Length: 189
Image (tube, rainbow, N blue to C red; front, side, top):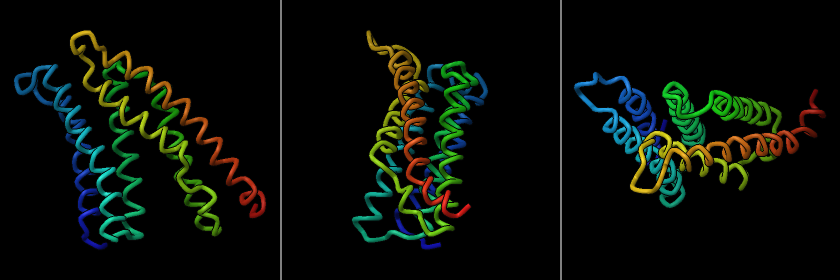
């Protein structure tokens, strides 16, 4: 495992995941509910920024690696899944939405692994649709974590709309990836 700056940022993101969850399990005398919301939001946003930053640095510094290419999406999926589970527990997100998003991530990860084994990994490379889906998730989740109104702005309402959009894009992108992979799957089965 190469210890590069991008890989260290990815490991840092993985370390931040339990902190997002742990904030909501802190004793009540440590953090008031609004402080929990703020702390979880800030930690998640920092983690999301490292997601962008590690990719940017890997390309800019020419420090891409097979290990980094493996670890980065794992960190992303863990981060999103942990946040969604907490949001469901806090009744800020619907369990069906969390299931759709997490289920798609598991399915597409398995599909990508299968496609790599049969030498057709490029047919399920990340698409623009997948990037838009990820952006929608990464904007929705902090709003749902924060939850509280900011003057006349209601992050919960916009976050709810965005997470529903993310779920719709999740299904759409899953269909797209399956369509792209199907000829290769049909050929090998």
